[in-house]
Image (tube, rainbow, N blue to C red; front, side, top):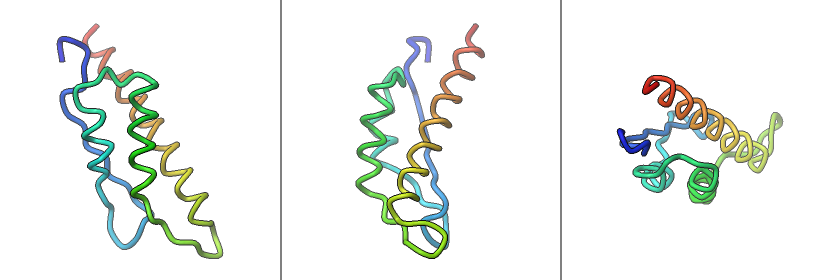
Length: 88
């Protein structure tokens, strides 16, 4: 928005089962923030506690959890950069 705050965010995650799932805890924590590092870290921490990936021969549940959080961090940071460029 005009105050450089996140007005709306939707986070969908794949690789947790048969269909993508939303991350409402992270979305709630990020809405209204400036999407700075502390905001993102806090939201991902909340999200991490709700993720229940499976372990199989390809990856452990913990590895999948770490990857999902890192990819989500990168996507949020990219969205923040794109939004700030659009305002410029």
